[in-house]
Amino acid sequence: MTKRALNSGWIGKTFDDFLMRPQMGINETRQGISLRSSLARSLKLELPIISSNMDSVTGARMAEAIALEGGLGVIHRGQSIERQVTKVTEVKRSYSAVIENPHRLPVGATIREAKRFARQRKITGILIETASGSGILAGLLSNRDIPWTGDINHRKVEDFMTPVEKLHTHSPDIKVEDAEKVLFEKRIERLPLVDNENRIHGLITRKDVRYLRERPFASKDDKGHLLVAAAIGARGDYVERAHALLEAGADCFFIDIAHGHSTIMQEAVETMRKEHGDVPLLCGNVATYEGAQFMKDIGADAIKVGVGPGRGCRTRLETSAGVPQLQAIREAWCAVGDEIPIIADGGVRHDKDIFMALICGASTVMLGSALSGTDEAPGRVIEDPATHTKKKMYRGMTSPEAVLESLYDEEDADTIDDALQTPAEGQEFQVAYKGGVRDILHRIRGHLRSGVSYSGEISLENTRHKILPEPLDYLVPLSESSRRESYER
Ligand code: XMP
Image (cartoon, rainbow, N blue to C red; front, side, top):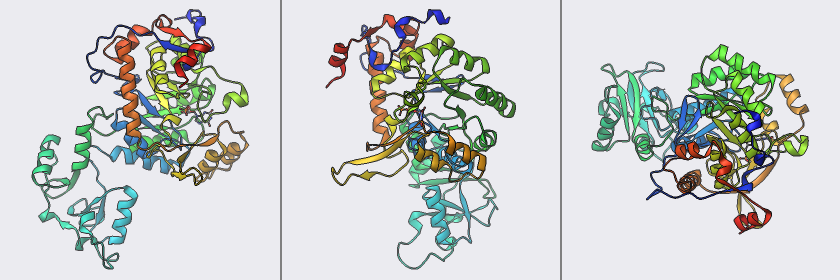
């Protein structure tokens, strides 16, 4: 579609400017409505929701929770490479049917070491090997094996572990369904996979198998591990960062810079292609027809759209740069159509905004503040002593607070200088504590399914197919008074 074809009805428009005209419903129940959508050229999600790469939104816990529900988490880059790698590793190891390289300690380790080891890795059972690095199973130490009382911290793990002779183990070729049976019949939590010489090949846990069974929509790679993405930026250490994250199992990269329609982005994509071949590169942010076309020309696998709509963002206030978010999404779709998936990033305040973004051009929607304040978002719950209400912090990644924290691990003086010289375009504030993110994701899933049903279709894919060529045929523009009638409650 040419830029001329962009209807003037989109100019200046954002989420609160339209309602969708209801179509004849054809669903008896909304439960089975598919929300499957494209994340990048080669990746699909069952829930088209991505958690923002922000330090107050996505750490390992958020990434795990959202992938279990069919979405995707993007681990932020405002931290050292090591810390980011640890988080990606944590997600890749969690809830996988088979843990291929389980954590292990040698028989000579002390109980104190074992407790710290388990705490740091958030695990409740440790495989014990005959000697450090031998890879030969000697036993299993679980929380239940360690007495609560007595001075035992200096004692060796071999005094408390269940030795291999008494353990239920299996050969590595076992199918997950058969492993489930063994776990149930033997009433055990963990099944180590070993060969004839007790060499460790993997571990299957009851918790992981149960979780995956309960969540058939989880976002998984072809080995059954949860999907996780990582942000890398386009300057400084991004190539080294990408290399380490890829080793840790990151499934795709977000090359995320404030002004993605730029030579810096072009150079970064070219470099990444040279270094890492066809790993999916999801690039942004842009907010215009030309910006999206540029992303297509440089070979992005998905285009992240949004300049300034984010709640923690001050870009429009400080620079006057930006495009109203629904207009930006539509401009991007008119430039690339369905050839390259569009990620709508920022500005979502209500679930209806997600649906509106999806029927105007986006394939997936990135959420920051909407997922902040949850148990899974990094940071502590703060109790306001005056009102006894619970809060958590939410902040833009270029807020002074986030920038300062990101510099803790930084050693390069130029990078520190550069960061401190750049004026802030983000801000920090408190948001209400919201409990578990799973409930929020369930609510969003339900509302999206209802949206599809009101559009008279049985899947999000069909809805988009019907509406995307000419959304204005299906939208009702709102006046001030109809906006009040719709949203003021
Ligand atoms: P919401 O509205 O979902 O927006 O909270 C999340 C998105 O906001 C962007 N973001 C920023 N933009 N300065 C900005 O200009 C910042 O400091 C900043 N921090 C986050 C980002 O795209 C995120 O996904």
